Amino acid sequence: MNKEFWDERYANSEYAYGESPNVFIEEILPIYPIGKILFPADGEGRNSVYAAKLGWTVSSFDLSDTGKQKAMDLATANDVVLDYQVCGADEVHYELESFDAIAFVFAHFPANVKQQYNKKMLDFLKSGGLVFFEAFSKSHIEYQKKYPSIGGPKELDMLFSIEEIQETFANFEVITLEEVEEEMNEGPFHQGVGSVIRFVGRKK
Image 1: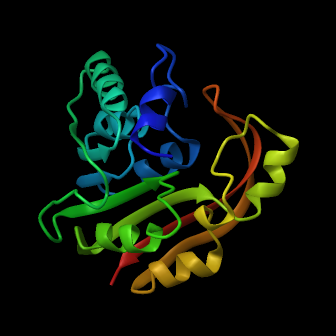
Image 2 (image 1 turned 45 degrees about the vertical axis):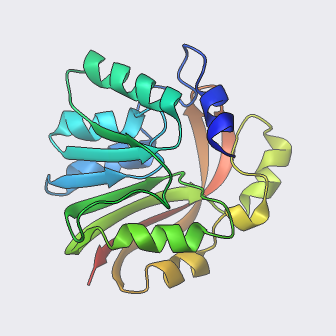
């Protein structure tokens, strides 16, 4: 799933995953103090725009120029501001320990670099900063057979296990870590029931 894939995915006027935020992000963000937050693989901006509406100072990035344009359109419609870069996780750079939170929302990087990229993002997080994470679990492969519109990577190694999350976020206080079945209604490409891993942690 490269730049061309995502530019095509986001080419329609309809938002591929809807304009409303991810349910987990919608529930979890208001619980914590507002600060500076990073959204890797932000796509069309539904989650970062929501955070900005709550008062967070938002930075995000994605491979897709089309995704950025739709994110900026959504931000304008909601009267908020995003700092959105078009680049890959291997290229992105922010000041070290400059964010109060990082939100990984279905940020499924290629299998051979996903742990490397996720750990790189953590260098940008302050000590005491928070991670909010939701992604499809390895069990999700079985759900895709029953719900073909549920979406998500079809390569098992791009999906996550509890053990992988524990390894990536080893230097974190675990606030929440669970694998749950979730009924999703997020635009045309997340429809049905899937299996996700949710993690909230605080950097030590």
